[in-house]
Length: 92
Image 1 (cartoon, rainbow, N blue to C red):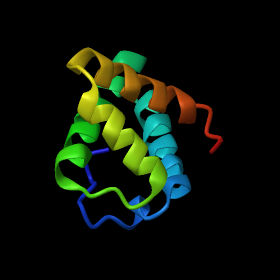
Image 2: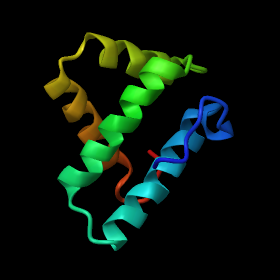
Image 3: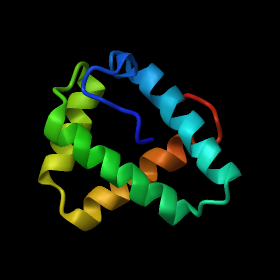
Image 4: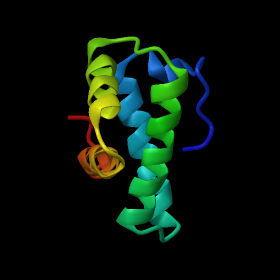
């Protein structure tokens, strides 16, 4: 998940973002990473995105607003929920 920059094209569409995240979660699971490790990595990505990237669609705006008002624990919970949402490989 560490190859994201503010100009990454996958940030244009929320569905593309979820697909990208789903693929990264599958890769992490394949290497034996726990759900907690995956969620912690996602929280790091979330912090980067919230600080460096302007939301490009309404879903990203909502996530940023939730991220910005959340405590560190809530941010980790949000990251965990997002990784769980895409962990089955389906883009809901």
